[in-house]
Amino acid sequence: MKYASLKKADLFEWLEHLKKKAKLYAPRKKENLFVLRPVKNVEDVCLEYIPTILPPKKYYFPQKEKLFKFSAQPFKTGKAIDKFEEFVLFGVHTCDIAGIQCMDVAFRDGPEDPNYLNRKDKMAIVGIECLKYCDKYANCTSMGNHVPRGGYDLMMVDIGDKFIIHINSEKGEKLVTDLGYIKEAAQADMDLLDRAREAKKKVFKEEFTGPLSKVYDVFDKSFASDIWKDVGKRCVACGNCTAVCPTCYCFDVADEMELNLDDGVRYRIWNSCQMDDFAKVAGGEDFRKGRDSRQRHRYYRKFKYPVDRFNRYFCTGCGRCTRTCMAQINLVETVNSLLNEKGIVE
Amino acid sequence: MKKQPKPKLAFFDFTDCEGCQLQFANLGNALLELTELVDIVSFREIMSEGTDDYDIAFIEGSITTDNDVLRIKKIREKAKVLVTLGACATIAGVNGIKNRSSLEAAKRIVYGDKAGIINSIKAMPVHEVVKVDYVINGCPVYIPEVISVVKCLLMGKPYVVPNYPVCVECKMNENVCRYEKDQECLGPVTRAGCNSWCVNNGNRCYGCRGLVDKPASDAAKDILQKYGLKAEDILNSFTLYNDSMGEKYDQEFK
Image (cartoon, rainbow over all chains, first blue to last red; front, top):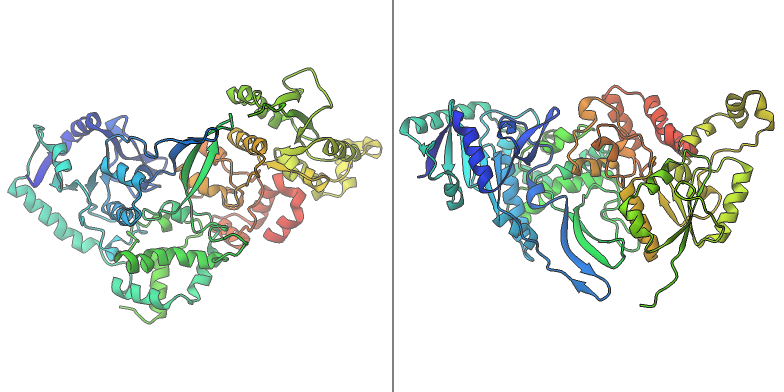
């Protein structure tokens, strides 16, 4: 079975089933926004949502993660890797799946990151394809992430009173087999899927004024651009943009002692290139002193450096950095002004 | 390891509400664990006894009289390690509002016709009078941070107060941003370390921990204006806790 179908009326039953099989995380409302949370009541799961405050990365690269335990006297270190439980990320947008693919590339690059890999092994991803824009901040079309491009186990598409489910892995198949209410998709359902995809082409338009290859070229030439000064002037260095970014993976490592002052825990905690002291080294030298150079660095870490190193853009188009920015620093505007400055306008 | 005598810990309060000592008294199990490592010899909120024989002094409250100056200097002479506990002692806190008026006017407002016989000087954080070894920010202090600082001081390590804003911790806690709800919040320019305690509980940041080293004041002003707030509003918010540094705030935000 490659494509299955599920009546919307049976969604909650399926969620109950998934909840029994593994730890289930799904989007739900938080005030006027959305967050991924462990599912307690399946009725709380919300599949029509704008990107969650934090991306799914918090489940495979937690904000603060224990690495190992140690004791000082006598000196002993515990096992570095904890046992993780099976979990399902449910209702993940295609942009965030692209984010997971980016993290995968980064964390598998040698030396491999065992904590990430072990969690990733236990993770199953059930995606949901967006048929309309979440809001005005997304730039998923320019990044090519408005449509599924692999990296998931199951992908759901809403075709009215049913979901079509694309089965993309053995792990995914296990989540839909032997359930009376999930059937192989009929030809009529597949026609509806084609029609939904066709309609989508009219809704999603490239957000950048130039093609992605030109964006790369422009970044190659814009290091000294005044646009960074303007962005830097507006930035308060709160670090929101990097925390919410599905592909920002910088972390710091620190030790924390118990009150007996002998046992301790080594943990890692998210860090951000937007922090004042981030690029400061011994001797007090600071490689990225101003907020302008720190913001520039963030953009280059999405559109230039990872392309050189991993042949992949590290912007997924989710729009979170723009959505969360109090100073309204807008990624699409910044990229378009760079394109414009170099005379690339369509 | 040879068993060393436990260091003796004493608490002192100056101009304050004694709420930070209350936080310390509320450490719970950690307080009991702590007594394995130190002897608490003077702490009037939890014990009747007291002594002048101590090694580590926890100072709560700001310095606001000539007598306070003499007293804190004496404590400093005796203490091997001196720690400021809470906003009043660390940045002068709410007491600093006094410095916004002339001393004479402040005395008149508070003491009326007795103003002439009351001794009062400008409100100062402890570090303006004597050397301070460790600082614990906050109004009141945040218990997990108190424990972290105590561990550092017992290990003889410096405690590094974060130099990034509260937003960093707030975002990790996945709170809905106050600005998202059109409410002002001092998170973007206030030093972190409190794990965005107030915002986690539905409140906003009042800036009780003081500014980060290099606040982006122009950008912060722009943000406030975008959300319909005036520079005076942020100045008023800041001066609730930070007026002992009034000049710095004036310079940054006026």
